[in-house]
Length: 204
Length: 149
Image (cartoon, rainbow over all chains, first blue to last red; front, side, top):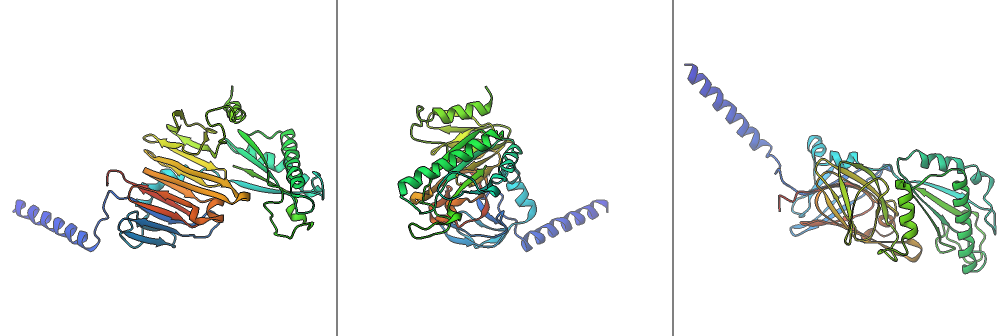
């Protein structure tokens, strides 16, 4: 009798798991796939997967597709996501931070408001365990292109010197000049535009 | 000599070194366990502040992870047993030269796209053994299971 009951119980368990298996086929254990996430700025972009078996577009958060392109995107459950991507997500560095500093016309003199921002740049960089900083100078379109190239380099160098003097500690500091080639606000030549007279500082 | 000094010296020595005309394209920002950066014949253990170059192969060991930030603000991080190569990296926005091509041969990757993807989405791709991912300005994670091939 005992044995019969055990058999019956076993049979029931096997049947139940078979049925469960049929209802939701377990995903293959070994698979290569991509999952779209919300971007740090809150938007959801798009990825396109092209493989030997087709092409898939994912444009919804937490949808996944096999890399061979064989299947339409489908949601990925939390446990699997954590198992496959937990380490990579946890290792994500602090995102870069940007500051834009503005200048008086024709020279490397910062506006008063921008000058007041310098201490916070130094402070933000210090909060990172490791940081590299780029300082990129720009000009508006007043004057010759070559002169603006030199002027925006002078602006970038002035900012670099000022933040170093305030105690900036970084692993690498890069100073560059884009002259009038990279306008924030597009203008015709010979147009004074305060928003284009700028230095962009990025802390990474 | 601190790490900071070494990195600065590397930068200063850039024009004299084997990477003659190549400046670093990014730096290691997070690390747990062991990882290496291999550029040409030069293989170094990854530490905070270790520079990356075009062509660098990034590799993490067992129970390890690593995060890197590129100079266009692209951010990548890797779980254990991962291999990614930066095949092509061009970032000169004022000259319209933009490209970020990488290959993930195994492991896991969290990718936050940067300025290159914003300015020229078709210039950004991640190749894997079974398919290629085109990036249209976003964050995603990808896993390549090399036992499945």
